[in-house]
Image: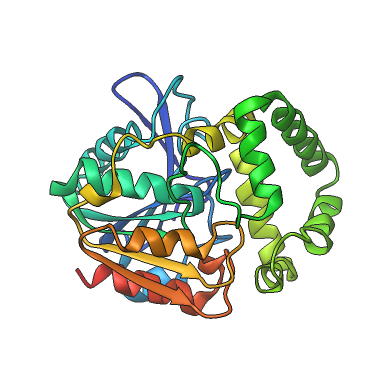
Length: 294
């Protein structure tokens, strides 16, 4: 496994960062991170992917990690980057997993390049907003972030810049804040911020997101709140939805609505679980097993 990842020079001149976990000759699955986020998901390799014979390819979206910004990008634009990377890696058909904000991009792949997609999974996923407004059931902190992203992104940028300074100057202080703060999270989610291993993995994931700048983390929520460029009812590939029944960051009622309009869809609700499903190894294995069935 590449310790830090690799870079592909895209046809339009931009750089695209990615990292591979699991079996190099395994079943290919592309992974799209949340908002904000990065390609870094594990401290070392992913033993679950290894055990299942999966080649997990995690990608930095434009403006995150090693990937260059793409001005005025859309959700659907992402599929071009995924397809170009797949061509470079000589992968013809593959599955896509999108987590949280990354769920929109997994859906985009299912819609735009169905001829190459085996299946997609939307995990703890954001859903299309009605009239551009987040659902009232969404936790207040998230609703505020979406509002700021649209109306005052400069405030989010200042907040993220301040956070990066703390991460660089006082990493232990930042990790302590992760462990003791985040009161808006459910107890189920906060359990994954209590061990040194989880704290270090979360720290690396977030710090890498802001490797070069913080702009994308501040503006992407607004992008996700707008029309994605397609309707979920027009996705013609198998879709798996995994969602915690106690998820307050991406309200479960919204994903239930989505499950009723996607033609070939299976909804998996996890009792008592919150937003961070991929942090639970048993749930992560369940997600991966379901995706590779196709």
